[in-house]
Length: 233
Image (cartoon, rainbow, N blue to C red; front, side, top):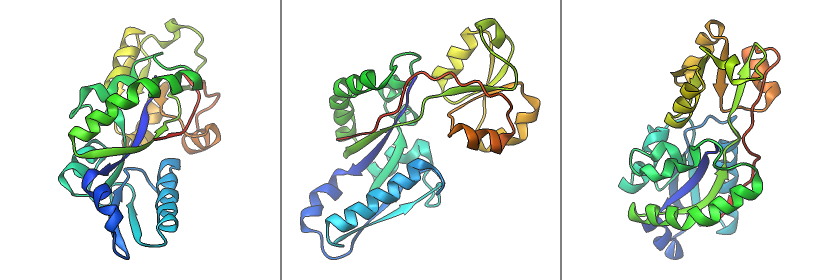
């Protein structure tokens, strides 16, 4: 189970780039806070564009929905011109294009080689989808693998029986249900106050020390489905 971030740019903005006047400005929306690695990558990209264009193009990065664009609205926001660029998880755009959630299927992608193969096959289709929404995908960033963190030891599927576990998308909800767990749909912001009431939580993990320090989880068990790889296109 692997999810990909993409950076999408409105086609009109690409077409106008060649004639960009000094300080052409594009708004770039990302749903993550400043401390998230994805938000940091967005700022690095914006800085690189400024350098590459000798300052002719200035990209203003807006983090954490501060411009009013949520993760599920990102593709639509670029299409309608609310922002010129957006960084978003593909599966969160499945309401617009269901095929964009294909990478969340359990065990579809395991390891970096399979990830590269998946993108070689899927990228042309994703490009067609983006073009139909007047956009172009500039690069992909595979998100860290999902993991299961628990206060109790988990070694078999039976250990998951009845466990209340946060599911982050429909595929993980169905997967956990079939394993006998009791998945919950819960926004990230509600996770912390509910954590003391739950025996385990399924999360898109940060680095393990940060996770255990933030939530006080002892002896975390991480079940990783694949490695990480960054790819640009």
